[in-house]
Figure 1 (tube, rainbow, N blue to C red):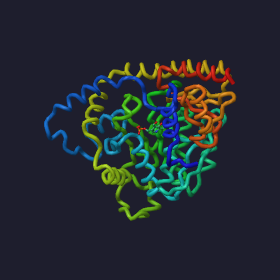
Figure 2: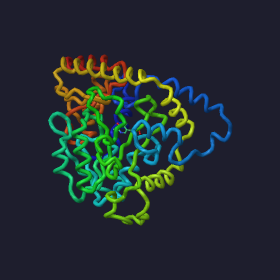
Figure 3: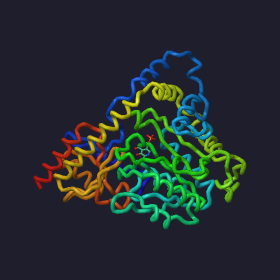
Figure 4: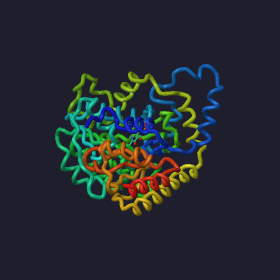
Length: 392
Ligand SMILES: Cc1ncc(COP(=O)(O)O)c(C=O)c1O
């Protein structure tokens, strides 16, 4: 599987070229408004004086980093503001591969394809651990797959594409597996505001040492504030305590052994970007301060309702799937429709519905399609699919 050219683009290109109206159930961008305070923050920034358009601090605006630190209950030193969750994941994986022994990244199957593409880009080996029958990653299956060659383990909760949410007990086991194998656990929690089960637990909460030498949490405001184009994310990286973190490979890539994990991340981030965009960080910071809890709850409820309705419609079609506990997607096996790229093209031609082929996410659900519910037209999409199946 070539993870370096995401199939996302191929499906969207095919949909754009189609000679008919196509309902987009592919995109991962929320279709609702960002917080009003985010727009206000951008407007306000546009009128500030010249110096506000100079470089900002490389690890991010201090006020924003402090807000993120307070939200997660960690020290500000752990926070680096990044160009979305994507950059935070990259920094975590690249630095983890350098600091922890081995050259293998353990990923789930199905997988968010960018982790796999990034593993290739970093010249590391991927090992895929299939989720179990109910679309969850079983900690004991993960434990059996992790070995001395494992450097980094990546988990994602709530999960894209399965919708799985890991509870505190599972997260605690993931952290323990990383620690006992001298590996880094990267937990991508970008959908943390979209938990419909009440079971979501951050890897930070599961990390009993508190100092987190084996844990990185990544996230962003992309989904929670409906601003995927703003590119404001962050990582919470290990500081100071390098006793366990990479001690065994000290100096492996020529970096000073006394440079902490987060310092190394900061250098990488600076060499790659200098710093992130200052105006959008300002607007996000203002939005964090002023946005009421009801904004997040309204959008969480919106997605919970869409998922319910969509799943009920899938039941009527006789589809096989697991009801997602989180995130925006439903991964389903539709009767008579496979999960290849050709099947996704066929669905566009026959039904005017664009979905992601399951094979884009690996082998384990290669006969499924992933439906993103970020459009009010998701019910019309199921009707179109039902009509197309009837016409066959
Ligand atoms: C699991 C996961 N991680 C990261 C991202 C990218 O997030 P960002 O836009 O904050 O870089 C996505 C986007 O869909 C995602 O699904």
